[in-house]
Image (cartoon, rainbow, N blue to C red; front, top):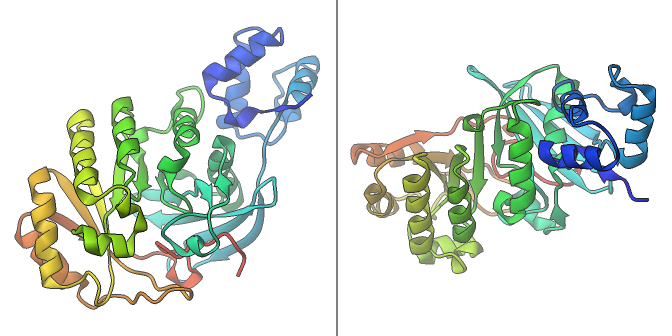
Amino acid sequence: MEKTDILSLSYEELERKLLQIGEKKFRALQVFQWLHDKKVPSFDKMTNISAQTRALLEEEFYINSLKIQKRLVSSIDNTVKYLYVLPDGNKAETVLMEYHHGNSICLSTQVGCKFCASTKAGFVRNLEPSEILLQIYESERDSGRSVDSVVLMGIGEPLDNFDNVVKFLHIISHKSGRNMSLRHISLSTCGLADKIRKLAEMKLGLTLSVSLHAPTDEKRSSIMPVNKKYPIKELISACDNYFKTTGRRISFEFALIKGVNDDTETARELIALLKPLGVCHINLIPINEIREGDYKKSEFVESFKKILCGSDLNATVRRTLGADIEAACGQLRRDNT
């Protein structure tokens, strides 16, 4: 009999599964709290559950786990980058960052992705809800730090793994488990317009970050091939709908690349594109160079920001963390080089 990945079950699914094997309804609360509040790695740690019931759980379920293959700590800002080995031998990276407001963790949602260092190795598969959750749990166990906020901005496109990511969100925010507010979670997408509309309908309350990187179709398609499927007009329409449906401000990620999208004309085009949206935030990213790519860091980040702010757009420059260990935005990989 094939066992069930218990960490990937929502509270409601766990309750149904336990009822099916003859357990009482209240048992779901006990088990869920052990898994997601106390984060136990095995059933024998569930000390307020009888040995007979623990044996039954062992027969029906398994508790997934990740192994740390590599752990790097920044000498500059205490950022920690983990290379995790998944149960099937594939790998994913996770970054734990310190801010004045608490600890934030950048999670991967797929093995491989479309627009960062990992794209060089290609897409392999989606991560299960448990594999996304365990990046938090294992990082907390290893570091001794408690995670206060989450960014789904590591390897992979979260909205390509829609169902598993949504289930992760339900599990991490459930009141009987970790109970993390979705307002403390940011989901970054390369711009899958149809999935943005689907996410809006759910009204989850999380922050949506859209990787824009260019204000015109010609330029964006050269940087991000996904634009050929979801051109800017369609993407901006979906973003406008998201804001109007959820009331949540959208953050647009804009990586400034030397000689590509960092000139005054591009700034003016960006203003014309985003100002009609009303409330939004532009997160300017000094691009982090990778050894496989040709893009270079722009020298005009502050002047670009000044142009945007001069037109009453809300723009900030992202603080770069973990660059010395290749843990900054766009530098993640799924190998150990």
